[in-house]
Image (cartoon, rainbow, N blue to C red; front, side, top):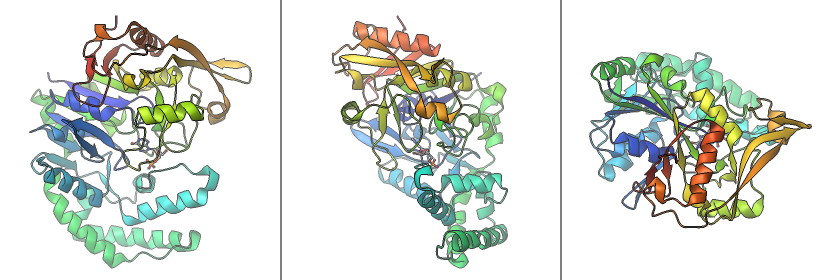
Length: 428
Ligand code: IMP
C-alpha cells in the first residue's frame, strides 16, 4: 500500500503549506489540488529562487511528479496558462506532468466582475475577497448553471451554456449593479481557444487516482486556504467558497475516504489572516508591525498586509477535530525568536462565560476577550537549527504546550523559508 496523505491549513490560510508540501512531495508520486482556485498563493523557496504557485500543485517543482487538479478546483484558464508559461520559462516541465479533471469548473470574466461589484456594494459587510471570481464561480456550480472544463472543449455545449449564463448575468449586471453589458461573441471565442489548449490535460481524475492507489503509488492532497476559511466550518460568512478542510479532498477529487491514511495540519507558531472577519487574538499596532515585518506577512496573491496575532489554541484544536489531524506541522517558529514574552490563547471570555470550544456564533468570536497563557521567549536565533534537541529549552516548552493544547503531536517544525530550515520533531 502506498501513502495517501492530506495536508491542510489549520488556521486562516497562509500557514506555510507550500513549503511543507514541497518537502513531503519528494516521497510522493502524485500531488493533487482539490479545492479553491487562483485565490491561493503557495510560496516555495529553492536555492534562493522563489516560486509562487496559485493553481498548479506545488509538487510540480519536483521532477517527474504527476500533478493533478481535481474537480473541486475552480480554474481561471488565463491564470492557468500564464502560470504554466512562467514555470516553463523557469525550466520546469509542466506539459507532461499535469492532469485536470473534466469536472472542474471554469471561471469566466463575469465571475470576476460579480466578485468586484458585490464587494463594492457590500460596504462594511464585505468579505475582503481576493477578487479572482472564486465565490461567483462556486455559486454557479451549486446553482447548477456552471460551466466545466469538459464543456469548454465542446463548441456546441459551450455555446448553449455560455449563452444562457451571459443572458442571465447581463440582466444582473445591468439591472442591479448598473454595469456595462458583456459581449457574448468575445468571451465565446476566447474560451473556445482555451478549450483547445486545455483539452490535452483533461482526464477523469477518479479513475486516475484509483489506478494510482491500486498500483501502490504515494499520493499527497494539497489543501489551499485554511480550515477557518472553509465554507462550512470557518468563520462564516468571512470564508472562501469551498471546503478547504480534509473532507474536501474526497469530494474535490473523487478519491474514497477509506483510501486516505494520514492528515497533517499546518499551523504557524502564531496566527495570521487576510481579509475581513473575526480574529480574537489579533495584535495591537506595535506587535502587528513587528511580526508582520519579521514574518514578511504580505499576501502571496494580492500583496495585502496580513493581520497578525498570537497562537489561538481554540481554533487549532477545533481544526484537529474537523480534519481528524494525525499530526501538525508548526511553521515560522523563528519569527518569534526575538520575543521576550509569548502568549497562547487557551479560551475566550464572552459575557462572563468561558469558551474553550470554538463558538460558531460570529457575535461571540467578534466580541470575546481571549484568555492567554504567558510563556517566556527563548530570544535566540533558531534559523540555523536542524534538530529538535538543539532548539532552545523555552522553544521546546512552547511547542510541547501547543501540542498539549491542540491535542495533536507535532511532526515538523520550520525555522525559515529554505527547504533545509526544517526540523523533524521528537516532541521531547
Ligand atoms: P475568496 O476566496 O477570494 O472568495 O476570498 C474569501 C476570503 O478568503 C477572503 O478573506 C480572502 O482574503 C481569503 N482567502 C482566499 N484565499 C486565501 C489564501 O490562499 N490565503 C489566505 N486567505 C485567503
